[in-house]
Length: 346
Image (cartoon, rainbow, N blue to C red; front, side, top):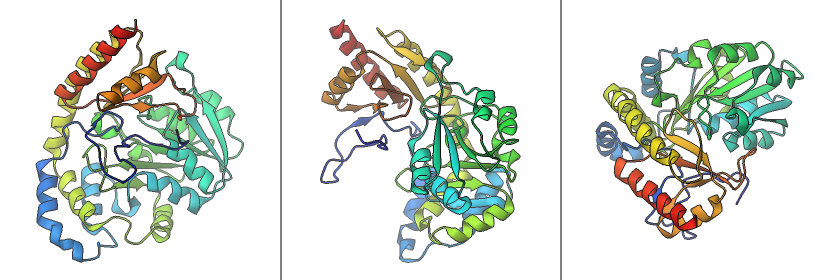
């Protein structure tokens, strides 16, 4: 598989979608909210206009929802845009990436010709980051460390105190793209000249096809980043959908409550399957290992079920798989299929 391939590969060579149960992409299992559907329907004809280049309405909604000043915001065409934008503008000579992690961190660093240090975490320690060992890898205060919180694909959460500790030695980007699935303190409230926070809105609101995210950074850096990005980087419908979503607090509450219960059900069943080794995750996906993972993937594809092959995550191999948590009935479909495959393989 390609070095930087992602989940959600439901398209054939002609660009048509197959009839898949896609567990390879970590999207809100509740799907699109009614408010987003209504906003898209009401604004569809508005695509004849250019998007608001200042994204004023969207920034106001982000500011209110997350309690951050508008002057610190950069709106994005998905969170992935931020890594390219930030590294292109700040030009650190060296980027340190604890792995396994989202491959766009490394890809963006390579695109901006940074030196890259992959900091490998271990399965034996549940892929937790040893902060003191990570600090020992820093060579200059201008080095940049990129960390997912929760991390993809492991689900690990680095503590705020450890982020502040790292910022004493290097610049730190915290990717909180899955944080809205949890009720925990965000690093957004601790931004500084050394700490930047980026967040996707496509995961929690199930709009990856629209591409939407934002970053919270120090004011002067926000000005530089906003001047350096494509002026119309967030399209008209994405802005309208984002505003509708961000004012829908009930949808977030419902998502968290539903997922908390479904995750317990899902993990309990998965953990009891023959030969499965699970790495704990608090969010809407689970990393697990099985010695017959390639066979599992092949058999699931025959049933039109996609899991994420983790072979191209640095620090993992072909025996690791990541699965999203989807609707209850779809989860039962997957778990029954896994149970059947592993029974046949015993």
